[in-house]
Image (tube, rainbow, N blue to C red; front, side, top):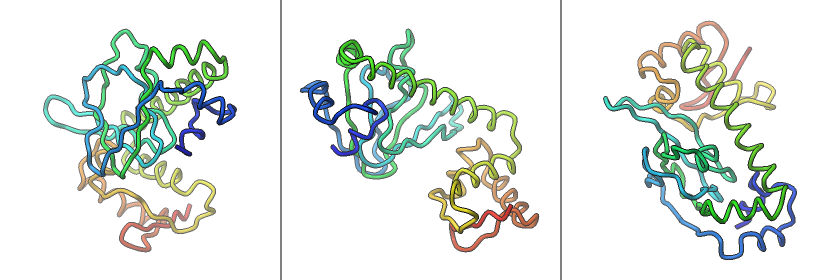
Length: 212
């Protein structure tokens, strides 16, 4: 449960107080790697918080085309903006990409927590705002960015604060292609072009160095 106290929903709150807020108002679920946590189109009635592990949100259209929307690493909430929406059907399916522990708080209980403590309400609103901004940037990249610009932005995120040290990516080329909404051959060509231009250097199977 240690990851729970680090969740943004409870930021700035004492652990004992969090325990009192949550008193019997939650459930814990464990998922092995690859397990389906939630299905696209399902009604979202309880806030899910990743306590351990990592989840992946994938969106699929009627033709079967898939885009990876985001990866949700502990301790973060899943789709907080949809919990109180008039149409609260999930726009994505959620999968565990690592063994994961998920805490589930029913909407009614979460509402009571926010009424009891203004800090919980502020934290929840801040998380919704931060996630909306992140998803807007993702949409901008998918819609308007070139494949190379998407890759460079991804590599810069991976190396944040590392001062051009080699880094490992946790994705296959197919997974990256799904994230950026492109084909795998197109992604492979773009990586090759970034290497030729001296922007990145491959140092291992999934290890790269950002040079500029």
